[in-house]
Amino acid sequence: MKNIVAGIAASAMATVGAEAEERRNPRVAPQAVYDVAPGLGHFTDDVLFGDVWTRSELSPRDRSLVTLSAIISTGRTAQIGGHTRRALDNGVTPPEIGEIITHLAFYTGWPNAISAVMEVKTVFEERGVGPIADSTAARIELEAQAEAARTRTVNTHVAPTAPALADLTNTILFGDLWQRPDLAARDRSLVTMSALIAIGQPEQLPFHANRAMDNGLTRQEASEAVSHIAFYAGWPRAMSSVPVLQRVFDARETPKHRQRLPPHRPK
Image (cartoon, rainbow, N blue to C red; front, side, top):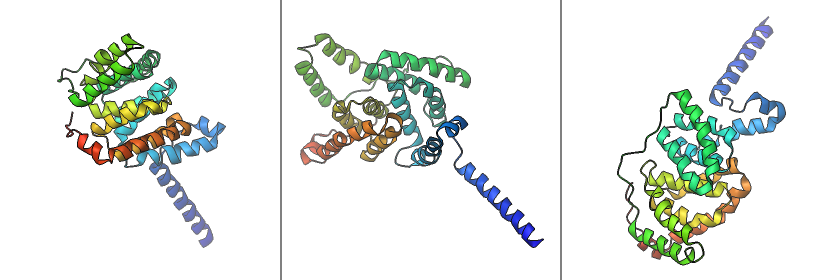
């Protein structure tokens, strides 16, 4: 009798322990994933959402910015709805989500942006989010010295071959989009970096990684963003960005660069 009681108690404790573990690490992967690719199910629940998403090196809100940027940029429309809900829960506002889509239209193309709009609108309707209006806040002031250097580079290297592209870069991309207050300068830079890594454009990363850190993104946050993107755009694209980002980190450690840096002003 004692053995039976002990067996029942042990079974109950195991059940309670399993339930507690389930509460600590709730399943995110649907049952279909476990039915078809159980390893993927375990990596999804135990590693991606059970570990990566809980790492303190990047806030949940930032992880949502990075994830939305990666999946919108790569046209993964089926995943946008779920991550839009998660982003809202993590504190990303509806206007910010709309501005992420607007920003990414310039960096990864209008088709991806329009496709994202359709998915996000469904979530906004679920959540009772009405039409989004442009922000009435003051426009973001770009750092004059850095902007002058960027303009010279565009005029020297782009204008002779593609004058219309150079003009649009100066007047629309940086003369308008980057100054919109609907997304903070630091967040806009994080979105841009994430998109460039996700679409495999590391050669564009030095300028934008420097801009991101000038706008307040820390070295640790930039590094962690690369690790996070590996799960959403694949290891090869994340790994390709590592040496490029390391060169940016090294260059920023030089005394000459530190003397050049303007004092950071929250924007």
